[in-house]
Amino acid sequence: MQARFQQIKSVILDKISEGEMVPGDRVPSENQLAEQYQVSRMTARRALTELVTEGILARSQGLGTFVCDHRPMSSMLEIQSIQDEIKQRGHKYANVQLSKKVVLATEQQSVWLDVAPNSEIFHTQIVHLENGLPVQLEDRLVNPLWAPDYLKQNFDKTTANQYLNAVAPLTEADHIVEAIAPNDFLIKTLNIAATQPCLKISRRTYSTKGIVSYALLYHPGNRYRLGSHLEFNRIN
Image (cartoon, rainbow, N blue to C red; front, side):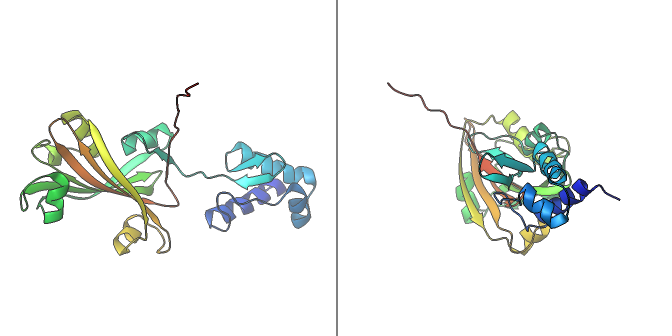
């Protein structure tokens, strides 16, 4: 049988995992937990303290204890391989390759890659997993002129971003970030609820040769976020 403080921890963790408590929510105080579960204040304090130490909760002096936002965060100011991001967090990376083929460019795709309509381009769809959970669907178009061996790559050993940056080093990129409602394909592929919003990043990358790729990156909103740190030079 679990110790009483462990039971309180389990209840709080279950509420977070089931979405009853979300990042930013204040959890009950020590006194409230002690009264609710008929335990000593010391027992309630131990449950909260361990969750704070584990990074699940955060204390704010004078305000209380709150649920942390524990979703992985990617920088908005640099382009990094999703595999590297996940491994830097000390987590396990894996992927599922859904599609890897040559297609004929549509009118819109030809504009994205600056190629002629109906010309051959490469198309891949890869789901990236962090600790077994999908965190990104990468839907990528590649210009064969600058990466002719793209489809021959073993994406179990390297990511598209790593390979492309090796054969056509990145010089610039533009991207658009937006929130979208998932369609049936995204719901199934990312293993999310129909009500769960997604983060969509549209990214076009360039080398000195020209436009290398255009990628649509979809993230489950409850498992991923974007952020960055900016520094400004102060002028006295």
